[in-house]
Amino acid sequence: MMASVSILQILKILEEHSDSNNPLSKNQFCDLFSDKYGEQIDDKQFYRGIRELQKYDYDIVKTRGRYSNYYLGSVDF
Image (cartoon, rainbow, N blue to C red; front, side, top):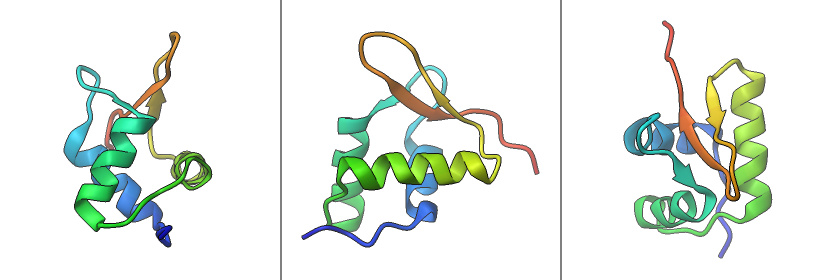
């Protein structure tokens, strides 16, 4: 069953499980989401959530390379 995904759920996982030394691949992220919330997140939901967070000025960093990884960069309050 596909989850109704909140960008706050996506943000929480990035806050708790990623940083510049430990970025997450999409697949790692999806596994963590499933473990934490007991539901699946598909590619479209993942990418839409990342774009929404960036739209609200969250510093979501995408690494470059053969496979992209993501992490939450600086957090300004």
